[in-house]
Image (cartoon, rainbow, N blue to C red; front, top):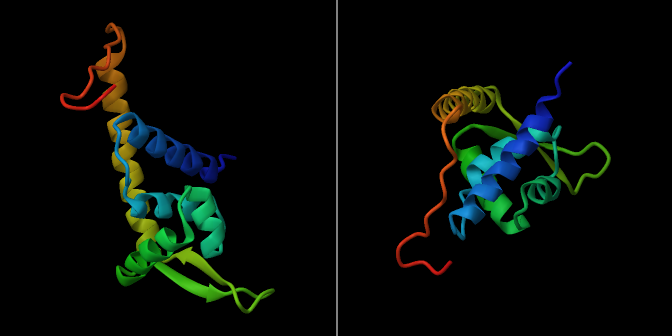
Length: 130
């Protein structure tokens, strides 16, 4: 049986690598958090922040936005009343399914476009130091 959390962690690593490659200093937190929630089962805010490689403050801000959209909800931790556990709502899970479908479609198009073609060299961005 496939473990979807492995794919979600791979996507987080891909996003982080992509942002580093393109020199983006502040990647969007919402996709990281959504995939982190997929990778972990009802994590605490701290566990989710660690998984996504972001600060607790950034994770909390992003979760506030996801909650406003109705994509996540909080529930109390049965072992520690001070902690809150985060989980995707049905709507949030549906959004993630749609995004995954688009990501898979994009991956197939990239593969179709590159199979049998010579690799290309990345060119430096004009005005950026290499």
